Image (cartoon, rainbow, N blue to C red):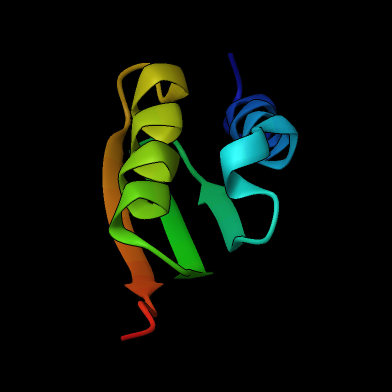
Length: 72
């Protein structure tokens, strides 16, 4: 699977996940890495986004740059 296909698959799954409806996560991929950027509201959303990426990354390493903006 090409980097572009992996990127699209992860982005599509994140967008379709009800628990991430309000998350602002972007995905980029190359032959070695999948990079997640953006922000989410909770640590649970953060873990969910990383889990989706990990399950679709194939052999690529996850670079997690997501910011968690939990409201106190």
